[in-house]
Length: 206
Ligand code: GRF
Image (cartoon, rainbow, N blue to C red; front, side, top):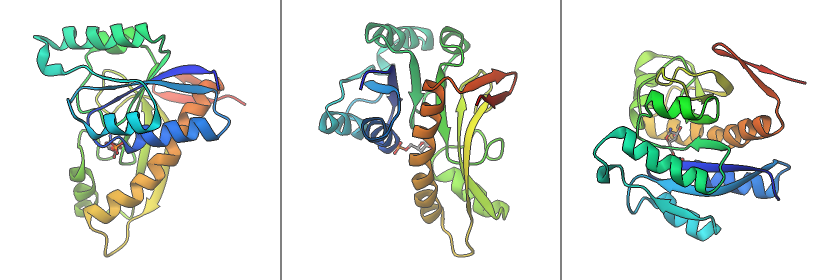
């Protein structure tokens, strides 16, 4: 289906990338996942792209002297593929104000907690912190990327209960299931032009 061209940036496993591809192919989402860019050579996300027949390439951040040069190379690839929306999916590089200004409210990220709680943490550390905190509820957040780390306007959140016997691993698995629903939902809202950003808030248009 021809729709808004979406590029995904990933560093690792790529399960959210795969969820996005499958959802856009199966559901009524006016988006076309056109490109995967990995910044880590050999990232498993690249194998998923090959299996799903999505064009993929590696832009290895270590090959660039500065963050700006890396981000310019990424942007050149995104432009070359006519990308209009960028989805970060387990992308482990912080993007500079140059990149966010170049793609204003056109970059989304998914974070495995209910932001603003547990911002700035990554991987299993998020779920460890949730359990240590005694929180009874956690979940995931899809947000636009701003210069404020994990602090951009929130598009969608999905919550789950924290169980007494949860471990960081069990929590991470249940949150991931929610992530795989939340990200396609957020992309659909964006593509249907149902999102209006006003300061830190995202309004849903009917
Ligand atoms: C997800 O938990 C996501 O929320 C976080 O990094 C993880 C990436 O997982 N930003 P995957 O690579 O999409 O499987």
